[in-house]
Image (cartoon, rainbow, N blue to C red; front, side):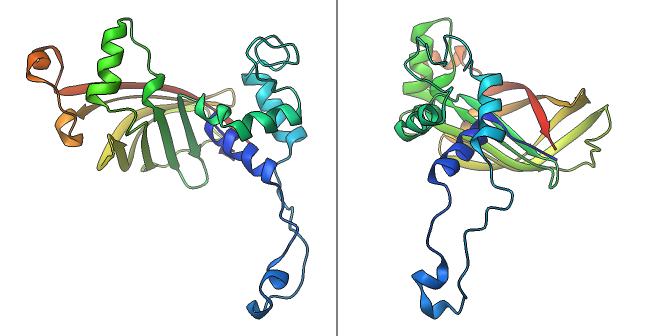
Length: 230
């Protein structure tokens, strides 16, 4: 079993659009020693079986959001519509936060888009993106690690876990171990986590004029639901 998040759904769609290349290694490089053969489609992700159902569940392809009579300008209810949106780059750029857990390897990946975070105060949002995070230069933050404890993903229960890996913020990487609670119920994995980020560790400079108003330790709270794919 493994989880497919919205971010990796977009990657899968790109792969689907590219599809299977017609040539093979024996034709492209006769000196490779590889004999002829056809394109291997074993386990291929298809639009009808995998992509369309996920888009229908999460992206409103049967209503005015992204259906055939949409008001957004992006029709995700057909293969050609999805292909055009992927080619334009609008699909992957619209995803703010996404995550994946591979239950076979216990690896976890989290991707955050800085400009996707909304603030009640517009000036605060501008300062966050332009002065502190430099979101134009460093648009994406990530955590890539592995869950240390043994988790039985087929059994409904709550597990106290830690994940060790590399946290990338502001263009700098730092080894981190993050604590969390994994709750498995009804085919859904819910992850609740809370940790602190030290601004100085990632060279996030805070002007002295507002230093007293900005915490040196930034509290990060994460709540995510993962759907199991068998």
